[in-house]
Structures are given as C-alpha cells and as structure tokens.
Amino acid sequence: MSTDLPMDIPLPPGPLRMGGAHFKKDQDFIEAGIRDVRMLRRTAGLTRRKTLLDWGCGAGRLAVGVKHLLGHVADYHGVDVQPELLNWARDHLSDAHTRFTLVDQKNARYNPDGDETYDIPAEPGSVDVLYSYSVFSHMLTEDIAGYGRTIARILSPEGRAWMTAFVEEDVPDCVENPTDYLKLDWKGALHCVRFDRRFFEATLWDAGLAVEQYVHGRETDGQSMYVLRRR
Ligand SMILES: C[S@@+](CC[C@H](N)C(=O)[O-])C[C@H]1O[C@@H](n2cnc3c(N)ncnc32)[C@H](O)[C@@H]1O
Image (tube, rainbow, N blue to C red; front, side, top):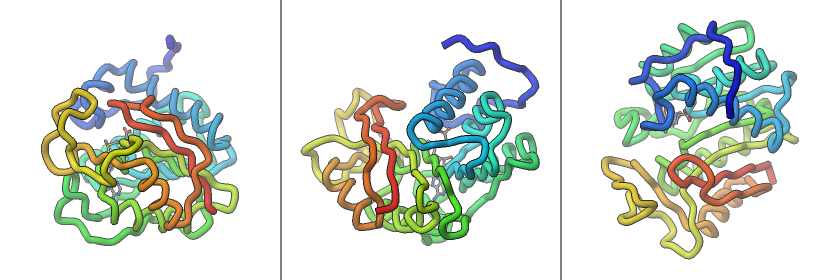
C-alpha cells in the first residue's frame, strides 16, 4: 500500500513502538494503523460516530491510524499498563475526541507488579468497537476468561470486539512459549501464548462472547483475527 501521509501527526520514537521489527519504519507504523482502521470499518462497523476502546494501545498506533484516515471518532480511548508508552501517547495524541488511561494491572510480561483484577475503564454497554491487537497473545486462560467477561459487559448491545490471538486447531488448550511454533524463538514471560481454537472459543463463550468472524494466521507473527459480539 502506498499512502500520501500528512506529516503533522506525531509518531512515537522507535523504542516506544510495540511489535518488534514490524513497525520500526515510520511508513510501516502509520500504514499498519490505517490498515486496522479500515478493517474496523469493514468488519466491526466503526464510523466517526462510534466509540472506540483500544485496549492495550501501546503508544497509540491505532490512534495515529484514526487521525490519518477519519480525523476522529466520537471517543477514542486508549488503555495500557506501560507508563512510558501511555504517557507519550497522552502527551502527543490527546485531543477533544482522543484520550488515554494508564491502568495498573498485572501482566507478567509488561507489568508484573500490577493488581490482579480484570477491570477495563469503561461504563457497561458503552463501547461500540473494542480493538485489542496482540494483547490476548500475552495472556493465560484465566485472563481470557476474566477480561472476556469484562469485554462482554462494556460492549454496547450492537458492539463488536476485534482482536488477535495465537490460535491453532487440535493443539493443547493453552501453552506459554510453545517450542518450534511459527519459526520464532519465544522467550521470557508470556512472549507467545497459544490456544487450541475450540478451547479458546469455548472460554470466550462462557465469558459471554460469541465469535462472528475468524481468520486464521493472517496477523502479525501468525496471529489469528477474531470479531466477537455479546451473546
Ligand atoms: C504486543 S503489544 C501491542 C500494542 C498495540 N496494541 C499495537 O498493536 O501496537 C501488547 C500491549 O498490551 C498491553 N497490555 C498487556 N496487558 C494489559 C492489560 N491488562 N491492560 C491493558 N494493556 C495491557 C501491553 O502493555 C502492550 O502495550
């Protein structure tokens, strides 16, 4: 994809960009955000009038995509546990329709000393589109169940959750850093958590979420894409 990119939207410095080598080039970072906004429009009904919660927003890759493609949505709310990333996004990308909230919840990889709760800062029924790119890929079964219940509660009745995860058919239910998986060397806490598809979808179902769309292996490092709705 080649896009004429306006230069006046700030970009986070390289060390604050999540996603390894994939997003180090400015062009790649911006185009990935734009691509995902297009996808949210197509698969999750995102428009400028909708509320968008970017759970695990990092330094605001999707917010940059929203600004480039739509200007703004009704309410973009980025949430993350890493202060350096979140504070950069808040300081450089906030505006009347764009806000960021730092939360202090435990994730053994990103925030090991945080609280063990499954809250997401949003009112029940208030989120039209929840986007969560490469967040469940760093979480274990009880987190999927706990945050899944929260997501089912905060989605609006017609809302959609768009997310990625490592999911395969006929593998053990949940494995942290599986060996010889996708030709990558997974190391360190929760680098890659892989789920069995049936188990993952049953866990989400029990949490109150139904699968509307699934595309295997198309996202970063071979993650799969889900669109979920309240059941
Ligand atoms: C692989 S990064 C992806 C960042 C961003 N979604 C993107 O695609 O550029 C995963 C992000 O999830 C965040 N995260 C992990 N656990 C979280 C939690 N419980 N609440 C909010 N954010 C969390 C991490 O801090 C990290 O920024």
